[in-house]
Length: 390
Image (cartoon, rainbow, N blue to C red; front, side, top):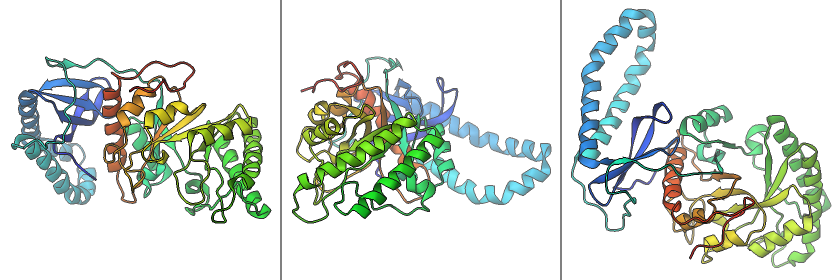
């Protein structure tokens, strides 16, 4: 996972969460640093030197107190202590090493990289004003692809996500991706694709979900006419929308990235599709990574007429779905025009490694970006993005 020289993570007690949570610490442009709870977004400006001294002091206190804690644990329950000893002996060195590494990162002198951007902080230490957020932030399942759905729910709760965006085939199709094409000109393929989405709708209703997300169809013959596929896509989405409406579900259709076969790419094409489907429970999924490169991201979002869901990740000219802050998307300005958005935002990415590192990274960066965007967003009505901020 990429790391920046002026940002690190610590386990600290959060006064708002009332528990120990992961905090992001960012060095400011003066003698202050911003300490932000990844779970709830609470931010405090602290004197950098004083904070370093307090943290190192707390580490030393815990180290000195450890022998007494071990003795107490053994006295209270010798059998449980002995049973858990092998696993603790195996994992403890790694935990100690990680904490010592963080401590050394804090106390050692470091040169600030020229490209780093310090957080905006007040003149004096103290708690920063809370930043309103009307949307819900979801953990996208591929952030923890090696884990079970139950693991995802636990991680989402611990990291402060509001929910989980689950992939249907991860739950019921034995981990095999489905090659769907809702606009196929082959009736058998189109019917099988629609049937697969129907099963997803039923599953979503059983789980108590509120939204089913689908990709639009694609052209299967190179350089074929997209208009020949359009009526079939519209008919497929109408059938799916009517089925979803019976269970009180909405349907979100993604706009896709510019590549061979895709024909729902621009904001105008996405708007036209929703109008032609003409169902009240159908809207557009804004996928930030899919915005055509070179377009102004806030302007693209502002042109979409009915956003029902957002996929948020970073990207550059050649790579999609990068960790937040590791690409070249204008994420702060984009979030600025989504300040009044009242739907859901899923933080996307992909990791096949076990652990919560990517999920934690994205949540931390989102909270930081949301704070930075607070000063440029304008309030909009009806859950739609505000006008573009220049």
